[in-house]
Image (cartoon, rainbow, N blue to C red; front, side):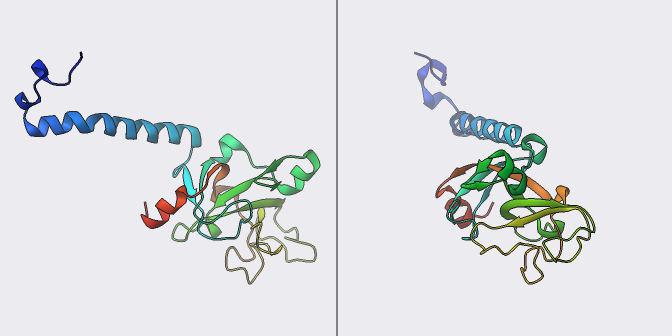
Length: 185
């Protein structure tokens, strides 16, 4: 039998060393998990917790969603996906996680990329011109109100620039996000 202790006697090891021997495998496993998650995601954090009902019925408050960087996953808009038949989370197009107006001091938003607009194009039919190119986004449960509407409070009158996108939703684990909501990381 293989033992972690000399002469199979744990009492011959200093208590601090014994603690290190017991904890070291857990630390190595944890660090390995972080490296694997980052390698898969290509972005940090590799997962986000759903904090509202704006994506119901396809994502729920308390779900944990694992994401991949746009460079790894690519972004398919709902408009283009309708033509190809590509669907994720019960709808056409990808669900993206982005920082509204590029701000790092606000909670990221997870909503569907509906279509791309170029600078000076109308952001929606008869809408104002886009100040820059980017995605028009929408929560599945937001009654058809784009995040870019002037009164949205999310990203008013501003398409989501590519550099604001943290990732594309790839996997959802129900209820796991409640842990992150209780213990902010």
